[in-house]
Length: 318
Image (cartoon, rainbow, N blue to C red):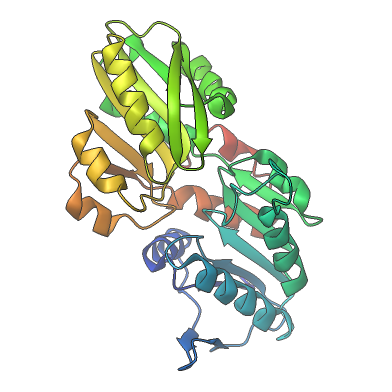
């Protein structure tokens, strides 16, 4: 592919390398370092004049540092006369702060959108946004890819009695996602209604639907401290589910998450590699990873060639 340059930020080098290998490209030369006062310094090590630039940087780890690094990389390419800069952000940072749910709360996702636009991004590719409306915070095109096709493939290949399963959403917000998967598999779905007293803590849960004698598959877009899904797993088992799986797009797993998963009764907790999971997998044998690099690579290829990306919403590229 002519006129394309792929750069990797420092948040998820492994995913960037997989995408580059899939596209048959070398990652562009970029040196990122920090001065002693912790300021981020970026040097682009090759010409990007007139090139179509893609910068892969996930919103994980040291989120603020990685976001700042992405903004600086976008700006560095833009003022070095690149024709177009696309930010590939598998896990969008601050996506949970997408509305004013109480007085004086910020809408930080909108702020991040403004920062990316001002830095010079011409296009955003991301995956499973916490709320699809975040696309409306941008005045530039946003491709919100879905992990759903890869999730369906994993369920069919790894759960032997998937025809007798029930797809469960751990909260009302994920109902749309769950009904879509249940329809594609032609199985039933259930919902857990939760009430929170304060952030990251669940007060009580009510199960809507019948899970008795079935394999329950919890589906959500992200799990952070894993309080919700571990509570939900206990609720499903006490309601008569035979096995409980959890499938999450973004496994953030901060704080007590790993110990909670180890103590919970999951058969497996399946996440995509939008966030690096190697260290987490060493401490938790239940975590399994679905590789989504081919979806991102195909989105980059189609965007570069001016083709439609909508095929990826329902198919996993071979």
